[in-house]
Image (cartoon, rainbow, N blue to C red):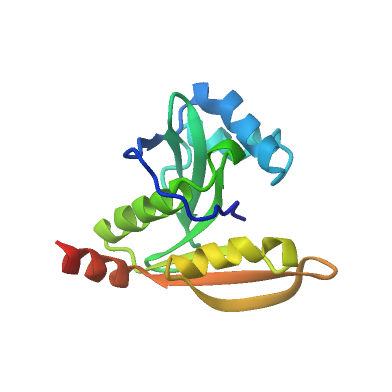
Length: 175
């Protein structure tokens, strides 16, 4: 799921780097502030990454004197060139500055440079996630699927898709 932000211009360049173990307290505070899931789940989610057992898992943070945003993406199993963004969140105090969009653009560029084809993201179909869905659509993602009542009774999963070659082509045109 994503915590999307309204439109406000980012006034400084983003410092995006891999997550390190010392980031955990700030990342847990970020997750708690957004209410995405219990922050203690991060320990298990990141254990393989920190142990070097998850070579294809990518955990990134936007660092502004400490982590203020986080993203987690992995290859989609049993596919060729398809990746899945499993988490993106921006601390509520930093939302609306373009951090989420900048982080998404960074991920798209990194995957494009690796020759990957597709990035999938998913979110809830509940009305309170309307801003989230609009965030993805604004970034050029198309709603690809709706899985009824996937998360729980009455809560659909909505999957968005973006072809990464389109990202590369758009970047080439601007250069």
